[in-house]
Length: 621
Image (cartoon, rainbow, N blue to C red; front, top):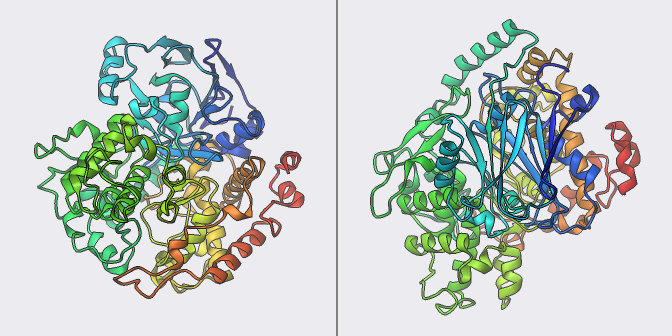
């Protein structure tokens, strides 16, 4: 087996309480790489079309990549995937922390969970062995309690735990999987799938030494990286994501405000972690073997107690619970973030669901009778915190919002759907497509629903100084922010292919590895003679496979859209006269199809599948 992999895939049958180990060949590993590549392969190969995502027929896959577990900055990550209960399509999310590295050290590249346990269980993996253990005593408990109990029960404080809280148990459709209490595989509802299987947690401990093909070259690349990182991403060391940008985002119109309705938010500075550092007692920590300590830890005593073991909010969480809900109270935002980590909820979907409910309340679609007497106005931090807990517990209106904004709007009716900010059922992340139209196309075509990570941010390609960084993949000139021509779509196609590679390798998006570094690192670890071109093709293969999964589940061209709100300008602020143009947007989607080798209905052609070495998937089309 090539370096970078153990060659072992653990299969766990919860229905029959059995485990087994499989050994894919080297070609499988090189073709699909890991992470999202493994997830989409097994879902297409083994799931029947049309199954209920919350049924025992769904499969939940945890996967690492070839770099996971090595002392390489930004690679302490793993992927979690299944058919999504939120969208009904392809579901996958990545997560940092230490759990993925521990799984690799325990001797496994991935875990395939199938069936459903009769009673709550957790999985215990240690140095190549796996055991299904009773979890009745853990069910109903929040994540902090569960981690402490598992470590005590197994008598090892160095165990790493991936788990769900009560939100996952109660099948909140955007429940997530939490690693190490503060790192979330947030999107697509993977925590709900885990809960549907009565699987409370996966505890892992490993001591396996990982071999490297070229240690000297790898050390050289890591040294170069650390020297660059201290200069280029120094802000992350001090306050993580969101620091120093909140007011700038508000002024440009990029800060989602009051459910993406407005363009002015005077409280942006009060949400900035670089400004509010002392008020929230901010400190910083790192994921496995990462030299960039970008993970926030906050410690607040009043008016809400916020326990530092649950970390602190990243930019997406700050904006989702803050400006998106019209709230400028950083302590309220930190409390909502803590609740999400305790109960295992995706902060983006939770914040957008509450913002949706607030707009419905202010428009008379919801009343205090619907909210259990809570005054659910924009700007009410206490109400936002209360509603977060109600969603986790599925109490009152929280039970409806736990279904996601698309289903909630369909149930509430009376004009509510116009305020439901989602793509394919997944809530919109905290970046504004009126300002970044290329990002809007990326939202529309994403197989998991609105997705901001494996996507372009138009401002990055409008900056002439940044263009040399992208020249290795043929992006040679800057392009205007507002442009939505074939040139912009070409950038989206190339860059999203590259970003989806990161989901297979499990590399953090925020680190300054470049198009030349990545294949050199993979080569140093595995010994493969690989190139930027081959790595790009891995990303394109994954996107195409995820597209086929969704087509098989009934998705079509009509699902590649964004909410109508984005075709109207903000009510105020920098984008008061700026909106997406419908005809231009639809034309750009069509151009993307053609550039990807798909027909005018967005269906990959047989020739494209053969070119990507996945011709076996044509049977599904």
